Amino acid sequence: MKIAIIATALFAIAAPAFAAETVKDSAAVAPVIAADDSLYREFGGHDGLVKLVDDFMVILLDDPRTSVFFVDAKQDHIKKMLVEQFCVVLNGGCTYTGKGMKESHAQLGIDRASFNALVEDLQKAMDKNDIPFHAQNKLLAALAPQHRDIVTN
Image (tube, rainbow, N blue to C red; front, side):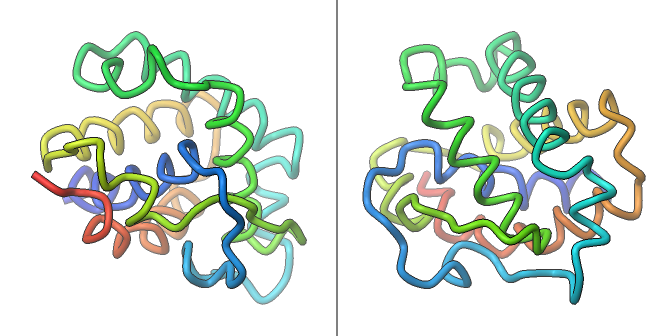
């Protein structure tokens, strides 16, 4: 069950990676899930999110199920967009400057298995960074509905 929730959320996270156009309403990316910045602080603030996303990218590139989507992509841009997206969702006071999930994933041909693999990889990165389980679940639950815009096959 945990992997299903995580899988649904994770490709939502990668969507901004392919972004180039600014989203005017960050709620179109994912809802802010905290009334204050306490959850953002549990993720280590900006520096913690950068470390998390750096580790996440390494895991994605090492995973044969997901590497095809990232090996030839602009990885620095993807990481920047992921940090922005996570920061917005965690109420860290950031602005997301990427495209919406549907537009940024439309041509990628992502299926449910690939989406689930990405979610598993995000969970590994969060575990590696000692993100508390309850905080992981809150982020993943906020991102989960975006699978409808990401999975196209």
